[in-house]
Length: 152
Image 1: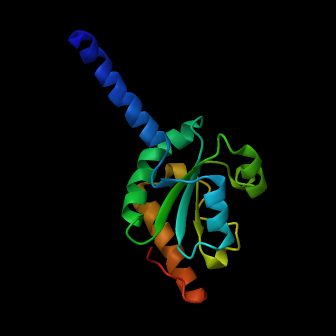
Image 2: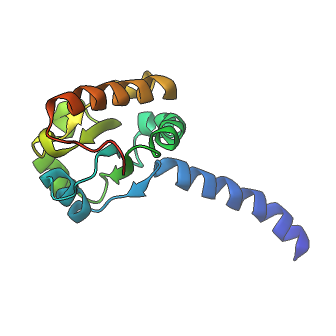
Image 3: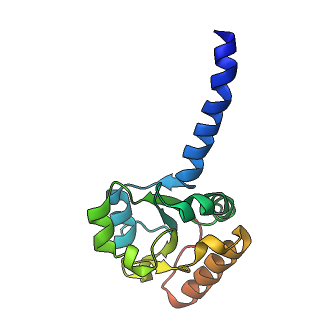
């Protein structure tokens, strides 16, 4: 039994790492939770990654997103939306028509329900650039909005 455990345990660790990485960082959002965020009913500022577990670029992007999300989580709420099982909802959002996945959007009161796409080519950016782009967008939004909160 112990020899089998020594063989299986490293595989389980790798599988766990892949699943955690593939699902991105932050809270994994349901369509209902995303709809609340996008509608402006949630007063918080959200940064949401849209991804697919079947997407090679999304898998490559996952470690960068995890680093960026960790840095951003002190000032905004961070979430991931896995599109695989929610295609009717995703089609309504037109995420795939706006550059596909992976994609990061910022939601706040003035985003009008669609969210503001940071960049459609996120997969090539290091975590520091992602954080800088989000902070720049939030800074500009704070100037334009009525009391947008940059904290959770």
